[in-house]
Length: 270
Image 1 (cartoon, rainbow, N blue to C red):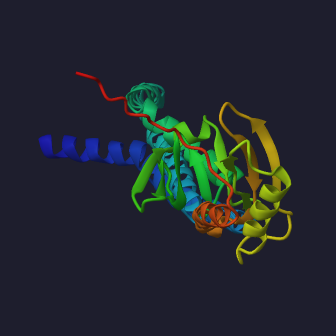
Image 2 (cartoon, rainbow, N blue to C red; image 1 turned 180 degrees about the vertical axis):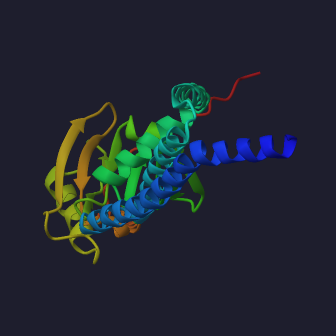
């Protein structure tokens, strides 16, 4: 008798639950096929839009997981599981994770914005968050720079995307700003000629835009000249140091004094 009862219960279970299980399996198989097709289509669209490779992979994984979670909820509903409470648990867990990872999510959002709008690219010389360096790597959460002294600088993307960014590489050229002071006794015309010769004789100073030398200000102890040569971005520091050195050498040759503070030592009597 007991055996018959178990057989009857098993038959009822198969009769009542079997169709739901088969339906859930079909939904899972068809759903996976649809997700793969959608991911494939999204990947093609991203490739046509020239998305950044790291951003493309991350977004595809994120979209895939979102679709899979939705599919799991649908399958559980088809089996007969109450999905309302399940969805509420997922929402609560998502909120808790979001609050715990608030800073990381901000950096992730900043990384997405950088990769979409591309204010800079790998190899660009930029200034951000008080740091200057060449962009070495753009990741989802951080951007890595190689500093001018060859140090690695890691900046959170949230801070970069919310702050000012100076990209020195966008135009391909950069102006070198120098201020050279000479004595009030110096002839202004002669000084300008000497400084201009220093600029035009340097092989890496560009002829376009034209370098300029102008009187900047009449300071307390010197006449200051604004010396403005232009160079390629990669030649900036070579031009900066060479012009600074050559200016001193050529002014000395021309007998033009560069003022400097004089200290007079007074000897005490007794």
